[in-house]
Amino acid sequence: MQLKEAMEARTSVRTYLPEPVSVDDLKEMVRLAGRAPSLNNAQPWKYYAVVEASRCQRIASLVEQKLHTILPEPKTDAQQKATSKLFDYVGLFGRAPALLIVATRIYPGFLDDALMTTGLAREAADAVRGHPYAMSLGASIENLLLAATDMGYGACWLTVPQVASASIERDVGIEAPWRLGAVISVGRPAQEAIQSPKKPIEEIFSVL
Ligand SMILES: Cc1cc2nc3c(=O)[nH]c(=O)nc-3n(C[C@H](O)[C@H](O)[C@H](O)COP(=O)(O)O)c2cc1C
Image (cartoon, rainbow, N blue to C red):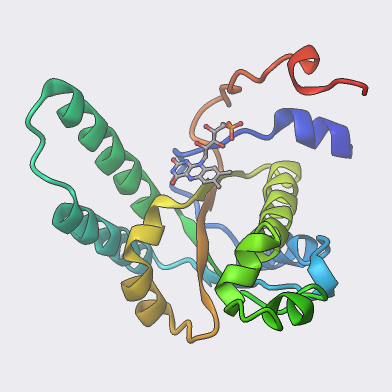
């Protein structure tokens, strides 16, 4: 598959065939994710592969438990619908044949020294710089999604699991200054991909 074809074909895939994903394939996706640009070439990412069904389910149940503690009992139909959709998605990722747990970290960039001499804390300096560590991680994850598409897999980038970041970090063994950055579910697509609608070029591009 050519790069442009993979970019056109990529879409978030949340349901998978019950086929295992080989660790070699996950490793190749992560190798390509590691080719992404990052501020100062700091490469603020570590990918942990989870291929045991019971462990995937355990991670999803950590998210479910946390959601139950932070979301009030739904009172309206709209709340009920929104909550059950959320839990459905969590259930789906728990049944994925593989998860990639992605750790990231805030790290000093070349602007930090200057910003921090003004008394700004590192996290505040990071916000002033527009969170380049998060941008760097996003570049790496997009590479991974394109690699997965190219290799015939479907994948979904998930940030809902962030609600349970402390318990997932404990489960996986992610230690400070590293923190949970995202979870990606991976597997062979269970059905033909449905492309999400995208804005037309006229809406997102202009020449000044
Ligand atoms: C930063 C980020 C966070 C996301 N978090 C979730 C998530 O927690 N759960 C989920 O099902 N999809 C999640 N997605 C997938 C988006 O819903 C999806 O990319 C969007 O609907 C567009 O669809 P497409 O990926 O098929 O183009 C996330 C995507 C991004 C980039």
